[in-house]
Image (cartoon, rainbow, N blue to C red):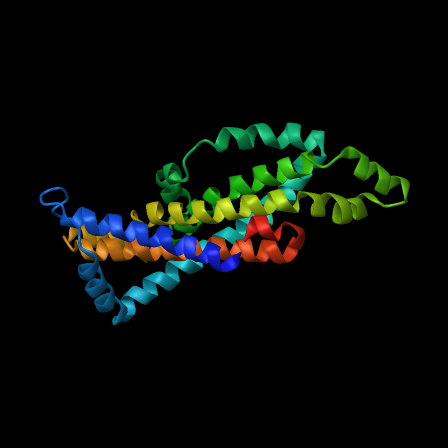
Length: 251
């Protein structure tokens, strides 16, 4: 039942909080780890200022913009590669060569190509989100039984109609799995990219660390965690609305 699941999820979060409290109580174990009350005070201080919320909004905008662009590019490309052997032979090998390169490793080259730090951060997030969506789209297309497409063709459906009414719906569960994974990786790459920039939550965390303001470090980490969780939950919710027959698996 739903309320049982919510209770179990609350227990999980409370257990994490309990581990944190116990860690701060162990004498000498983690002397620099801020306690929950210290973090609450730091959050209240940060929340009363406009600069913290500006960083939150900026980072959220970067993630969502890059995520949407990645989805718009990766889904059609994945459908093409999954449906066409020629496209697979021409495109997939080069993409597979690029895929293992960590997005943050592009930073030095991007500083020469893009120059603008904001564009660099957005491109790094785009790369992090692009490949999970692409690969899941390709696998989703390949998992569709060929007989379905043949049946649609035998009934007079054109290639575009088969793609729209057979291939895309059949691949949607895998596509949404890729979208959920991509959203999480987008937030991970955001922090890494912003550590090297001068704006956003990643910079907020790094700046707090260098200044010795460790409670603010945790505030930034929690903010990223909550925003990432909420973003993935949003993608799951959208997936559940599009795929009601899989709602129990996606929510």
